[in-house]
Length: 276
Image 1: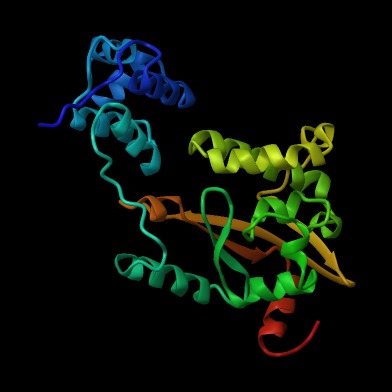
Image 2 (image 1 turned 90 degrees about the vertical axis):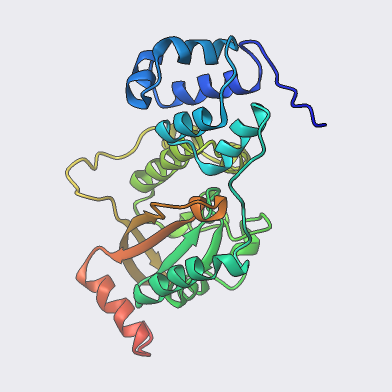
């Protein structure tokens, strides 16, 4: 016979997680009740530990709050249930069609750079133009920025990374840092928060909160100059809308587009074998 032991009280596992995620989404108990179809009284009882949630109630509330699948598993575990969302490795046979779709999208985006990131902004897959762009920065670029993976935040914010080549850093740097902070909060990203904590002492904190006035631009390009070659690009991010696996849920496809005709010609010329 198995016995399920559940923590109780307002500071215990599930009540705390529910309250924290509701507050992250900036919802009152009434807001959550109205959007989830659960009575405000029951939401209050769940947060106070006066009521234990059913498995379906956990899934209903976590769906309403757009809780990432990894954290939905944590909700289930905290309430005494088994996690239901698997975290398959990228080379798992059941991930084959997902990864095939990712590779097709990366390939289709050529001659422009594209990468697949996890929620800590580690580069999991990349296309040839992105690799060539990295090679322009030096074959040892990833080793210079530290870490045991190709991490995009380290590439941008480590002093030995890409920052010296970004000519509009005062505009781009603060926006990227804030985006990473928002994602770490919205996605419950402890891994991303660890990267931010490691990089924060290397930053000028005043500069990160004093972005240049760029409100007139429709999107913010980042402009680079490497060995006399000038480039201007902007990013578009895509995710899986119906992911039921933790790994797929956390993948982000970041595609870079040329922000001007000169950059477009540069990448198209490189694809045709013409060196810049």
